[in-house]
Length: 392
Ligand code: RFL
Ligand code: PHB
Image (cartoon, rainbow, N blue to C red):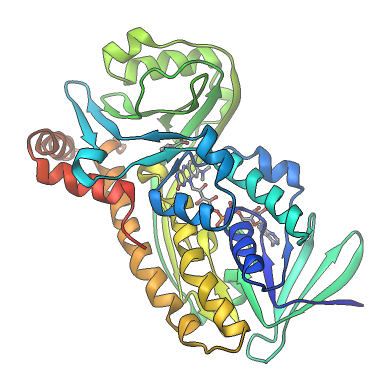
């Protein structure tokens, strides 16, 4: 069996794995990335759109900020609405901070380009990954690539393989504690080459259910509607989507709505999930492999970035023989931030969605929350502080 030696083996070539690898390489640490899908498939997934300031800064640190600076759109605020009210959350005035509209696809593409330049070995379409010897000085990752069984020998393993990956499951069941909330609805999202209905995002809690108007650039929109989990993409023609979306956003926005063919359409279930511990011997879980948030707070990709922030410097120190204090602290530092983003994402989800079978009390609570936001600068500042991202 071929054995490849490296310092840090990275399972998963999504944003977490690529960003961690890029930062480690720039600090002189060698990595190999194992990715289950082809590069084209990774780049075809349409996901996050909003980057916190801390994420933007970390991408600069990784040397991948140039295209983001040129093509990303800084946003100073967003809007929360119901059928009667629209509340503007002015991030800039309330916190002095902004967020950046720049798609996850673009971030991933920039990271692949940078990793190619570094000459990092990224093996695609890898299967049957088995992680072992995590309590030994040298750990191993066995896998199949191009029909051959191969072995990676390394000092540390980073589990960046998302919710369905193998890394988390390498930790024995009886040693893992999982916290989960599955929401009884999903988001149907479309991408369409049309101008945005509004300069800023609109999160709309209508009587017909939630809708979100987001964007990627001045001629590319990303719009979502809340749908029952039983719905299939095939149930939603473009016409049905546009009709429903127009009825769920504030009427003045609906009047400005420009429709067109969708170029992508998909349904994502909503879930809150945390798995502890984040460390098992020489294995560290990063990003969606350890935690999932519902997208209502735009936090998933940003949490992946904050995990990478905490871990990369700590791994550099450990690999360079400068001590293990950093990697020992990683789980506690990362989780403290993760749980606060969990709380915010859960609160935004509860505030903005209709739950099947809910009573009139739940509806009044949502109305009162929005009314409170409309009249209290303190409440708006609290929301803004969380939305732009708590400090790393
Ligand atoms: P990923 O992106 O899932 O990447 C994991 C990679 O690992 C590979 N993999 C394996 N490789 C080798 N061996 C195995 N056994 C493997 N199993 C899996 C996979 O092929 C994949 O390439 O996790 P990562 O890198 O941690 O990144 C996390 C983010 O992708 C995720 O948190 C965000 O997309 C969440 N999210 C949002 N986050 C934000 O910060 N802002 C947003 O506005 C936002 N909007 C969203 C979102 C997620 C959404 N969906 C579809 C869940 C909107 C949506 C609709
Ligand atoms: C997106 O643009 O895809 C997006 C924006 C904000 C969210 C979720 C998704 O909260």
